[in-house]
Length: 216
Image (cartoon, rainbow, N blue to C red; front, top):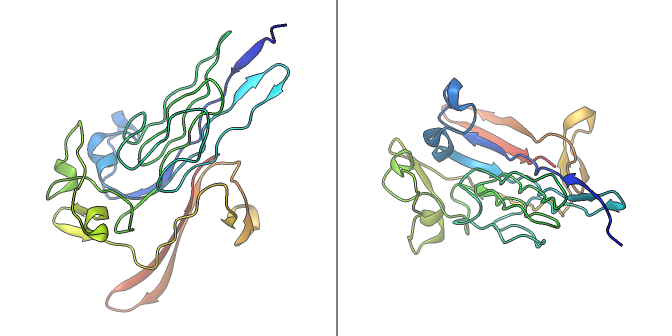
């Protein structure tokens, strides 16, 4: 017996902080703008949708994507830098990959989510070169031995390193802030991704706290 297909769901978008705004024609995806990202919360992979039921998508990953039907998304490989692959509708649908530092590839079952990135966070892999904005396309990645140096984005001569950083994959409980939830913890983020910046001190140098969740 063959069960009819309704289509493959799209993946969730990533949430990020970047230093260069895309021009209007590029929307969010300009090369220089994507290269300037210093923090990325990955989006979830899409799900295959059959008329007989659903197969859940894969939550957004941390340094690498969480296991799913699709191929793994890492710090240096995936569908594309900053892009998740589109899903496909039809008799043989494929679910779309999630966005991220690298976006996930589509898959017939549950597609991979993206990979997350924090500049200066051990295990993250930043863009190569003295300046990330000149990394070009195709991009290369840093090969420093030291994990912090290897993870650090350098933009316009400035090194960006987050301290006391914590990276939480989408299958682990993390704080939510939208709709008045104010830090209540839950697993998964079914709505749009969001971010919050909190000023912790206001002196000669400003200390801020960045918190993000990718889309589901």
